[in-house]
Length: 265
Image (cartoon, helix red, strand yellow):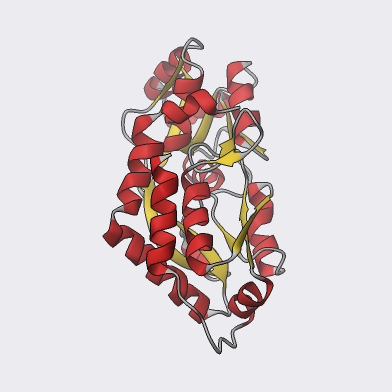
């Protein structure tokens, strides 16, 4: 695969030795020869399972390049989204790459490298419901059931801007999409990429989404708060990737092409 060759070329070009690092997380990664990156594994196109039950996605590729460049093994740890930040703070993982928006609240708990891509909030629903929501007055929105990912900025968005709705937080997007498909929820609020991928996956189910996202949000990599040298290293790699054209290539592969959906579980 063309991108696999690119990963190897980049790794050879940018691999470095990190001597004398006293910072906790980075020194452990170098010592153990492994970096543990947390992700949900069900946030397409950031991460999802193939038909052979392997992880693939934008952030899977990005994590692979990072690990190859550092000369360490990549251990992708799958956790529910709401458990990722606690796992990072407790030292169970070394970093989070899971479509995570950089917010002031999260930045008080962790350092963030990036952003490496941008996203925004959108609404996934059935066409008849979207017409009703767009025509309804704010006071009438309370009759709608809105589902969203637990602990995400989507949940915060719904609570802030749709306070009269019945909010149904879920542990993963598959559950939320199923609720919309089975009329257990009227709409799913999620990142625009999630909504667009879902439209492609369920083309005959009458699903629709907004033409323009409701917000613009930076997506980045969460790192332990006490390790500025680890942050510096990751930032340098991300900058090199951008200069090398890798981030643009990843955007084309996972956000524009769409052929990977055929290999999706």
